[in-house]
Length: 138
Image (tube, rainbow, N blue to C red; front, side, top):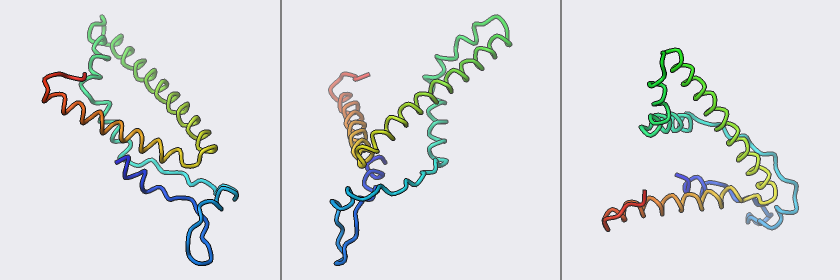
């Protein structure tokens, strides 16, 4: 999916009179106004699915050991608030850094998308192939 998104990024260029596209002229022009990308339901649903993983159960398991239901609910509430604040601030930090980097290197998003997608594919293949050789990469 990341590779597909990276290849859909249009190359910034200036149309010439003969119908060709000149990329070098674009660098000297003023940057166009960025269009905000709308976060769709698929992105939200991906977050929900990742939040429902069985691994997350280990994080909230201590709520069962607390002396009362109120204490367990307070633990879960604070866990929720802490997680949302931590992930939100992490996202803001990464987003602001990538936006600042994008102003210096306009096509950095496409390059990072390609790199992270290839790393994810490589890691997935390595995990699958390692099972055939009798060892695990976990």
